[in-house]
Image (cartoon, rainbow, N blue to C red; front, side, top):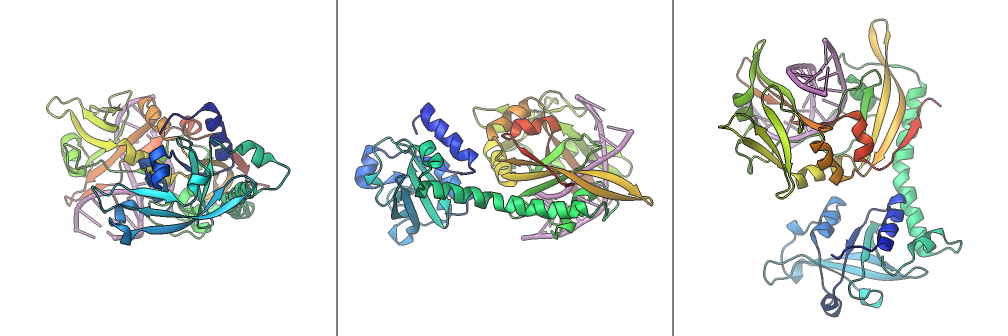
Length: 393
DNA sequence: GGTACCTGGAT
DNA sequence: GATCCAGGTAC
């Protein structure tokens, strides 16, 4: 796709501010003539992440073609349309997408914005449409209605969750469920009716919950993710443990933090190789060297799906009759992590990873990570400006 | 039953 | 800031 003009970038900013998540496509002259557009990587990942369509699961050929309703916006009018998503029988079956009627509103090399709302694609010409004028117009128009509807829908769940949190907070301190480090999160999730789980999905209707005791300034967990064993020299957590572990009490352990700016006491560090788009973990033992890798794509996708929207909930820990209680007090609401910042923050040592591997006395290897964690000050760098809510009102 | 995630910490 | 750590579940 061509580089966006400043004007187009401003329009995207405005849409993003209104919580519209979108993907872009640039029809070519040939494409418009033949009614064909390549579903580029970013289009495919948008469709997949929004659970709209997965080309990887689609067979080649017109019999497997999928039709999805679409609305083309021209500003003050809409055109009812359909999208066809398919993989041709020829060659490798490179994913294609087409919106019927697009030729009427697009010239070659215009940038077309695509979002998904109300079970339909919402399609508009980003280059030609005066987005700002339409959104702020005092004259009602279908595009404005769409943006307002998206905005309201996107906020709905957050408002609902916020109301529930305020109710919990205003009931006063809640006794801790279990006597453990993790209870501040467990107790809140239980109060919200969320069962303990190991799901990679966010916790509450797409919103991830992260609780912490306000007395602590610990790094915060982003997610856990094992290396890409296929691409790595080492093939298991056990192999990492055997090379770098240490005896501690009855166990053989490797519990350590690995950073890009320092080598830890096991001689491990991280680095990013932007050319091959990988995060690489290295040992200073010459015979070992680089031993595991993660693709940046994988890590970015984990970040985007887990932290699409997050409530960072601050609690005060109060001892009542020797038992820990939690008074949940404040929420910081972040959205849409900036994945390019992830790489930068790794390189700055602000995002680090923890190995949490041990072999117990029975010889069993247990791995709880590796956990990607961020220092508190990194949160405002990883996310666009956030909102804060007081729960004690 | 092992692996890969979840929820979070301490000094 | 560095070193190291905890109790859980899904499949």
